Length: 291
Image (cartoon, rainbow, N blue to C red):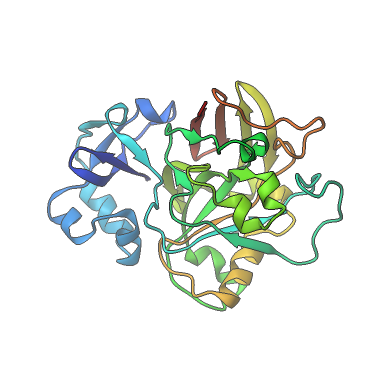
């Protein structure tokens, strides 16, 4: 299933995307989740907390799509996630802040605060004068936690992953020199979506492929297999320090090709269009807005 969160006049809601939605997300249709089911499980996070993905699939079976996604404002699929965990430096590449450096010996991570991520098609906000000069993009795969746990062994990690989505880990590189938290948490600097794809739709997570396009030109291309720390390692490590809960998300790092790692560097400016595609999941599209 593809599960999408959105906002319309009545407020935030979610739906099941109609089968065969392989084109632009905004042209897809969805089954709005309503009635008693929505009352019991008001968000995608609530569905995960209630271990109700199977119940949702049964509820949606045989129902007709009645919502055009062109009529709504996309939200990040897990817009109410308790934790947005991001893994840094997880592909071989030239570091966008520190330049050439050896691969890390240990996993590095940081958190994103509320307000840092917008949904599919929503504008990325060009930072104010000064920070805007180093506004950067990073295409990343996101893991959606579906089963809580601590001290999760690597061989059990995929039992805890409910699905996958896409993120632009927006960064202000000059402020990242102050601290990673500062550089990674400018308001509306990143995005997530367009939807969450349940794990049963992805036969081999290590084989899925990233294409990031800036104004139509491919600037990043890789597969999950190229990661320095694989998915089981990242989740097991994170669960050693944190109690992972349903609806938490883990963004898994970005490869060579972001603006700061290119030579010469190429940062985002007003009017740029960013498209981040992961095969089997979908394409997250946003434009940069600002003077």
